[in-house]
Amino acid sequence: MITVSVIKADVGGVPGHSRVHPELEEIARNNLKKEKDLIDFYVTHCGDDLELIMTHKEGVDSEKIHGIAWDTFEKATKKAKELKLYGAGQDLLSDAFSGNIRGLGPGIAEMEFTERKGEPLVVFMMDKTEPGAFNLPVYRMFADPFCTAGLVIDPNMHNGFRFEVWDIKEHKRVFMNTPEEMYDLLALIGAKSRYVIKRVYPKKGKLPENEPVAVISTEKLYQIAGEYVGKDDPCGIVRAQSGLPALGEVLEPFAIPFLVSGWMRGSHNGPLMPVSLKDAKCTRFDGPPRVAALGFQIANGKLVGGIDLFDDPAFDIARRKAQEIADYMRRHGPFEPHRLPLEEMEYTTLPKVLEKLKDRFEVVK
Ligand code: F6R
Ligand code: MG
Ligand code: MG
Image (tube, rainbow, N blue to C red):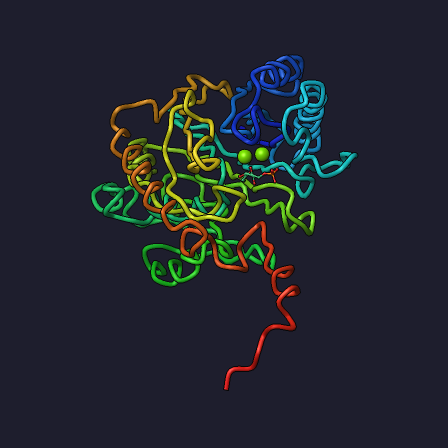
């Protein structure tokens, strides 16, 4: 068994919330290099999020691995403070690590599985949006026959998949099968700020039923800290091919820049733009929200590749459309549905405005 852990945190941006400083990535590389417990690692960024991709044999929720990530973020934070990067250390919500990084601020997607003869795997990283942004594309990869041809024509996929969905407000989860429960599943995950896909499993067939084939980070920073401390920009891992969606079926959902919540001040809807790593920085209105994808073959735990999958003219139309949608949405200014509904905004002045006006409100008869 092999474990892939993607752990990410925003420990400071340059300038503002736009991207990670290259020196922080260098510090992370140097720190991970000396860790004997890692088989391999890859350090990168998406916007202002520092992303650590690590492989090892320690399983998920390992104190050792989480400790390594925490130590790396602390060292990067030290540098971020020296350089006075914006929001230095913002995602490290605690001063002390006590065994598990969950609940301390960083986002985590990790899974343990038996490495196949050929093991293609994609790491997705999103900035300026929330975990629910993965609902639509992951649903389409594993359950939409108009996206994934294999669901219809590959005998190894024809049975469908099993989804683990979390209610992130009530802290509960439910397992649902597709295609049988497709409509029920959609009834939940269409409400993407509340119900999020956490993992996908294969059904009975060639692959072990208890080993995930996709996993998404679902940390909600505002629930951890009880107040707004930054956007919970998510990451995810998806395995591909041989009875799973092909690489191209995994990427296909991103050919449409669907709308996600986040963007400016975590309080706006906007298109998710697929970008190469060189464009993984947020600019216009602190966005638009972006997704980058790195592809690997896993070889005895080694991360072979690191292929920048959206660095491809095949996604140019999606990018152009994202810019058009960004323009269109921006024209709405402070109006919904560009601005999020009241209960989902991360910044609000409404209580103060209401307080100021309270004596001027008259009853309408
Ligand atoms: C969104 C984000 C940014 C900030 C915005 C204001 O996730 O990180 O859009 O919310 O730049 O930031 P402050 O309040 O730090 O000036
Ligand atoms: Mg930030
Ligand atoms: Mg971010």
